[in-house]
Length: 81
Image (cartoon, rainbow, N blue to C red; front, side, top):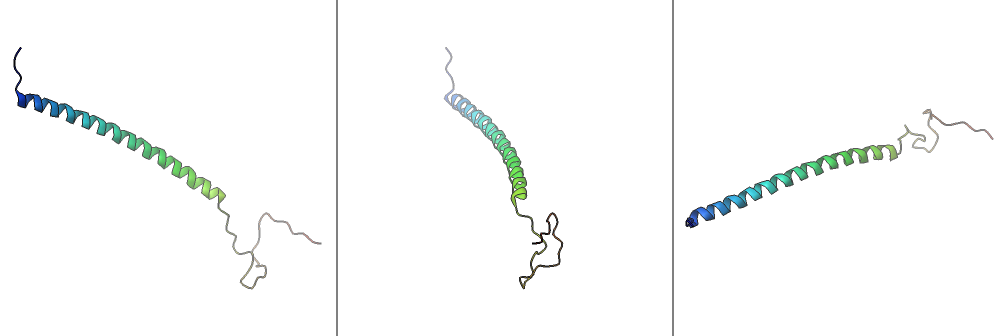
């Protein structure tokens, strides 16, 4: 059985550990990128939902004096009593 050089054995161990580190780092980078894509999609869906839920701003139904403005209100019906 040939004797192994201790320095060579240590270098092989370091190389093996380094390869493991780089493989795990690559895997984590891929997971991180995938999570980023998922988050981007969720952010877009949240923004769309917020746009639906936000109240639509009318162009002033009442003036500063509290009186009805002359702006036309769409979708409403005038009711007389």
